[in-house]
Image 1 (cartoon, rainbow, N blue to C red):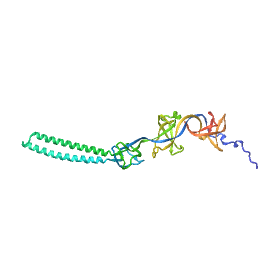
Image 2: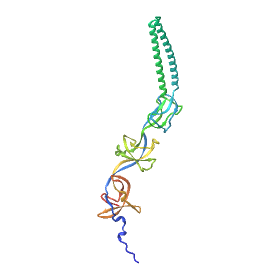
Image 3: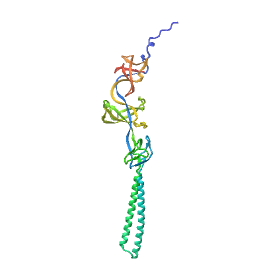
Image 4: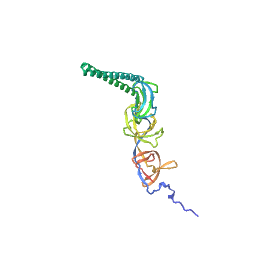
Length: 329
């Protein structure tokens, strides 16, 4: 029994046949931002030292490197033994002044009693009253001196100047520190990324430009987060332009950690097609174009996915020209 001859149309590639619901688009050049991958360093807004307000010996440390702190939290205590001795000396003066004051008041009461009987003069009464007033002032002065010494002793508490994380502790328990010496440093004010970019790319750097940030320790940028350049420094250092990038929820485990960043450095025109217009056959990328009412397959060399106003499209490096009409199944 003879088999029926196959129709010639059945031998043609399916892609060359018109497909129901297929669409055509015109290939045109779209602006594409060229980016450069660089490493940025996680930095803190401020690094503030927690300083000793009095000189003395470090008696206690309540934090270590990496500890989170709140504003005003005690990070260390400095003790000066001389202040304790001064408090004891002032207490002794207060006790002596109060004893003299009690005696002067008793004397004043006796003089007043004698004055009532006409056995003394008004001058003696005035002298006794003045003596009481002088001793009252001396007791008040001693109390104020005691409060001053106690205030100085309380300033032995080294306070965190702001909320943040302790970067370093410069003193150890038992160490002698001077007034104003830094005991610890605190990273405060949040985190940001600092970039150092070659100066040949400085023209494309502008405040508000978007950048892509990779994950921790990433060698590539996959599922990147977005940040924005918030400051570009006018001074070029060692051929590098310094820029700061604001990013939400940066990892705060390490200050100084390097993170991969992709920064816009140039703009060019590129021919792009939707990913659905490209088919891969025998390792070759093929697109179908409409040429004077006929369809034909074209082998193309494709590049990376790029962002366009119509979404993420595949860049076509060779094989297509601007104005070609591509068939999208």
